[in-house]
View (cartoon, protein in one colour):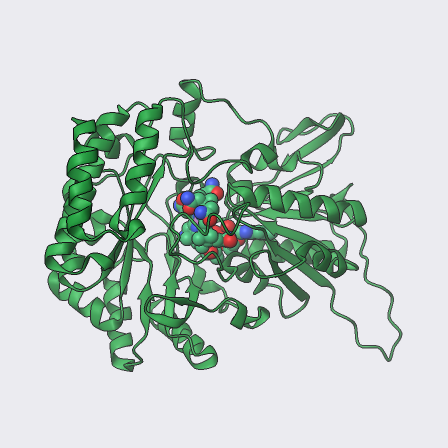
Length: 507
Ligand code: B12
């Protein structure tokens, strides 16, 4: 299909008719194949999430178009519903991370393509952004939006609506049937035996999120996304900042935001929080930022505003980097706790310094202990994530140090706080496409995936890279299962297990 020159499909109106808004259909596929079996990487974190990615792009076109949002985690029979909604739509768009979302998104895209071969199918999000050329070669995808989607989607929708070409539209990769010789940025590729021309338009600038209007939560049925989460019954996902300035070699974020970070002003953040509290009775905000704590000044200002309002709201799952958090002094932790900070989520990743260095974490294992003490002391729950199996690192030594570090964290929470307030996410290293550690994996013989759909089969939970021995792999899984947060064992029971079953194996 030639999406670059799609005709304006708006019907001609009679003088007395109000123009019906054209529809834009957005879809968030299932992140895991078996929802029942794998709630999420941590079984305590609900899989139901407000589709922030789709809401973020929807806000740019919601005034002029009829935006329909479908989310596989809440919508039953979503394929049928989407097929019905796509009738007369301007485009069908899918958001995807590197996971089962690709498989589910492709299945639905194939069904849409079969029924509406002329309807442009657009993919965006982390996976398409990091692998745009491979993604566009799928026959059921016509346009890939790379990076931040707000302005790109807005311009795309306008151009499609007006029947204008996609030439020069920043932030997209698209394809057209191959004709003659391509220009420099155009690449001839083969898609299912057919020659196509892949066109990579220039990147779009990473914009300040204050330039966009508020998230249009009214476009979704909020009650279906409001969840109960530890501290409150009415919890919703919320974004206060985007991007990350760090450069971790395992993470997709640096590729995506190119080390940039943008944040809502404290006033805007708190005004939106208050609006969600007033309109929907939200009492708990699951902060979905990659790093909430980049600017201590902003964090303090948000806390002061929340304290002043005295609404008793909870901020949970608040992501921060250990090297930032370990610098906060007692007064700031105290202020944050008073403002409603109930739980932080820190990607500690490893208790073994050579692993942290190999990941480019820019942090030290001492930071893990400092952050743990601060949380325990200030009655803030801690969810710490760790991974094992970093390429080039001896896994047995790595897990020995990491498990020992987790044990010390358990000791700290047992002694200074309450063990129930400590949660771990322990997973295996997964090579995400385009990252420096993915490259490293290819060098040591990890097979290159050549098709989009293959990325959809990635096991995000128990990925087994060839350099992790079966013994280390099984031990890690068992250790994870036995952690107090997963097994419910009390401190003494767990200590006994660790001393008698784990330590002797690790030397
Ligand atoms: C919420 C979240 C989830 C939710 C689900 C989100 C969803 N989409 O359904 C849950 C908790 C289920 C989840 C799961 C996973 N997640 Co997650 N998750 C996030 C998180 C914290 C926030 C995403 C978000 O809502 N951001 C806010 C919105 C507004 O931004 P955005 O998503 O980037 O959207 C913008 C652009 O990407 C683009 N865009 C996005 N989609 C589309 C679609 C179209 C059509 C267009 C035009 C544009 C567009 O436009 C938007 C506005 O600019 C991010 C980290 C982050 N801060 O972004 C990680 C992140 C997206 N997750 C990640 C990963 C890896 C996972 C897992 C696959 C693995 C894991 N171990 O966690 C699992 C899936 C398996 C499982 N265990 O469930 C990675 C993605 C890396 C990658 N290469 O895909 C991220 C970036 C974290 C990280 N740094 O590693 N995740």
